[in-house]
Image 1 (cartoon, rainbow, N blue to C red):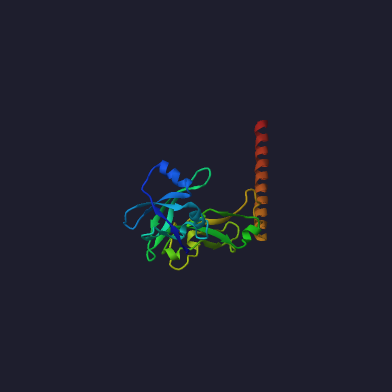
Image 2 (cartoon, helix red, strand yellow):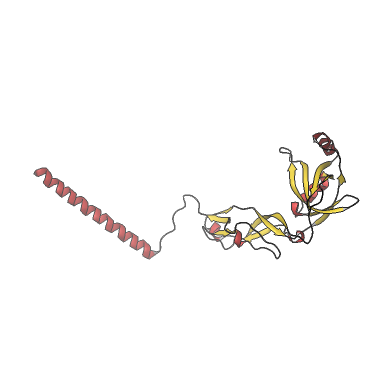
Length: 227
């Protein structure tokens, strides 16, 4: 996983007014916490942070905050954006250690050509991220799931996801990640010849029994009317 340095400055002013003035200078307020150390109120340059978060590792990029007097290894968490414009407004950074596992969300992508899709099925991905635990340097940028063996109605679950060495997940192993769904209104698959013949014979026999019963009922009804 990537590792980068981001300049940070301690801040003493709190509240919406100072935060707004800070944003107008191209910086945003942030908080650093974790590892049983005191919380730090800092500010970071929004342009550089946006560039980091838009990179391959995204929010799982190890960020070393350079405070001048010290450097703090962190991950960006609780990323707050403006609900309309999408601008970064505030970020929480959690302190981490390179030798200690942390939790992270990684995206799941699909690869391969599913035979079920070629036959008219719909490939439906139901889980798009996986919560994993790993040392910071071992967190993958993403996880790829091969769907090339999926026939119609086949599924892949969390337990089917290949995890790199040193990476684990506590997500429900039975959770469905992707399925090849049968389209609504799709015709039923044709029966084998033997089953089709047996079904046809059964239908003919049933029709014959129904006809006999009807004739018997008609005959009985006629006798009753005469008496």
